[in-house]
Structure formats: structure tokens, C-alpha cells
Image 1 (cartoon, one colour):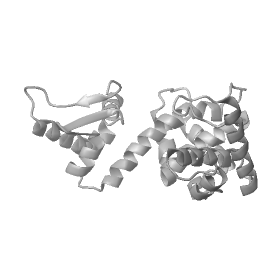
Image 2 (image 1 turned 180 degrees about the horizontal axis):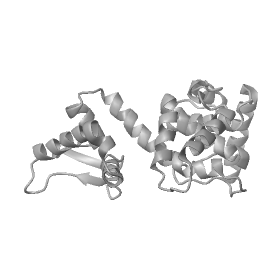
Image 3 (image 1 turned 90 degrees about the horizontal axis):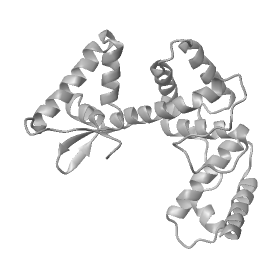
Length: 240
């Protein structure tokens, strides 16, 4: 938990007092958010960041977002999960937007949150990465994009224009409903073509790779997808 902020009780604070603090935070967010200074908003965002955790008891650690949605706002757990997904998407979008809006030639897209990408043309890498984010966040992708743009501290850019530019590029790439695109090959097909007796992590791994392939080659068909998978399998055998 070295990369997380731990909200927990000290010797002079009980878990109830920490819970009360989070309830107060929820109240502030609901009633005073738009009156907060930029510093106060930054503090709230930091506390609710996905890397912040709350020690509810000695055996259970949850995020403050989940605690607030469950205890204070009395909302569904899925609502809290959506907020956490928004946070994750903001982090990822922020690493890709410079590549999307730049008018200059930039190096191939490299991000620290996706290391196991398939070998694809540089021109397709941006589509793969944006596609993966939108597949996860679904209909909330515009909200996540807006939060990303608003959180940018660069005052020299027109945030409205940045949002419109990125949204337009996503639409041009045909990614606005990408989560509705069905896989060309399902788990059983993977097992059949790779002659696997059982499923498991290897099937899941191939399914993730095949999703990336579809994002890289949106006009590809089933046969081309199978041929790519089989070729990748042969290459792996040759190098091991």
C-alpha cells in the first residue's frame, strides 16, 4: 500500500470519528463544491482519488468514495464503482490527449498504464488505447473527458476547444460506442483454434489481445483475426 494514501484512525481518533469526517466531506461536496477555492477542490479530489483508501475496520479497507456512497449518500455500490472508473479514465485520458491534439509529429504512443500491447502500427496505437478506455467507462466517456480537461492546470489552453477537438477525433475513429462491438472470436473459439483442453488465464489473455487487434483493425474479419492469432502463437513458439 506504499502508493496509497491511508485514511485511518490514530490513537486519539476512533473509526467512528473518521467515518464522521467522511460524512462531513460528502456534505461539503454536495452543498459547497461550487463555492470552494481551487485549492479546496484539489484537496477534495486528492482525498477522493482512487489511490486513497479508508480503513473501515481492521479487516476491511475500502476507498472513501465507496464509504461515502454507502454510508452517507445511501446510494448503490455500482455508483461508487462508476466514480472510481471515472477517476481511472481521467488518469488515462490525460496521458493520451497530448498525442491527440498535437499538430506536430510525436513519438509512438507509450503509456505506463498499458505495457502489454500487441504489435500494431503506430497509427493504430492511439485508437487501441482510447478504445480500451472507452470500453471500460462506456457512456461516461464524455464525462471523463470533461473532467480530464477541467483538471488540466495549463491555463494557456482553451479547455472548450481541447474537449471539442478530442471528442471530434474520437468520433472520427468510430469509438463513441465501441463497447457495443462484439468480439470476432469468443473464448470457445480461442480454445478450439489453440487446441486448449481447459480455459483459464491463457484464454482471457488471448481475448484481451484479440480486442486490441479489433481496435487496431476495425475492418478486419473473423478469418483475418484467426490467422493473426495463429501466427502470433507460432512466433511465440519460435522464440521460446
